[in-house]
Amino acid sequence: MHKIVHDDQVLAIIIPRDFDKPGVSFFTPDNYSQQLAYMRHPQGTAIRAHAHNEMKREVLRTLEVLFIKRGLLRVDFYTTTGSYVESYLLGSGDTILLVAGGHGFQALEEVEMFEVKQGPFTGPGDKTMLSSVEPGQIRLNPNCRR
Image (cartoon, rainbow, N blue to C red; front, top):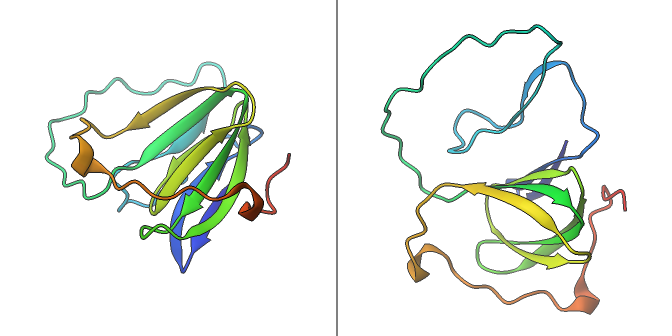
C-alpha cells in the first residue's frame, strides 16, 4: 500500500495489483466516509448473511475509488487550492482511493476502469475545476513501478 501525503494530509491510498494478504485488510480509518478493504479467504470460508440497516451519515467530501481494469493511467494530485503536488502511474489491477485535495487524470494507454463514489452528483457546485499540470512539470512519485 502507498499513501500520497502532502502537508500531513492523506490525498490518496494506492493498493497495487500484487497486494496479497490473507484475511481482511482495511486501508481506511473509521472516520473516512468511504471504507476500503481487501479480502482473501480460503475456499469454504463463510461470511455470515447480513443486511445493512438504514443509517444516517454525514458526508462532507466526496471520496472516490478507482479500480483499473486495463491500461495505464497517470493520476495528478493537487492541494484543495490547486497547487500541483505529484503524479502516480496506475496500471491494470491497481486500486486507488482518492481521499482529499484535487486530482486529474491522463490516459497513457486506453484505460478501462470502475469508479465508485458517493452520489448523487449535485451539479457544478459539487466540484471546483483546477488548472492542469504542464507536461514539463510532471513529477512521478518514486513508488511508481512503471
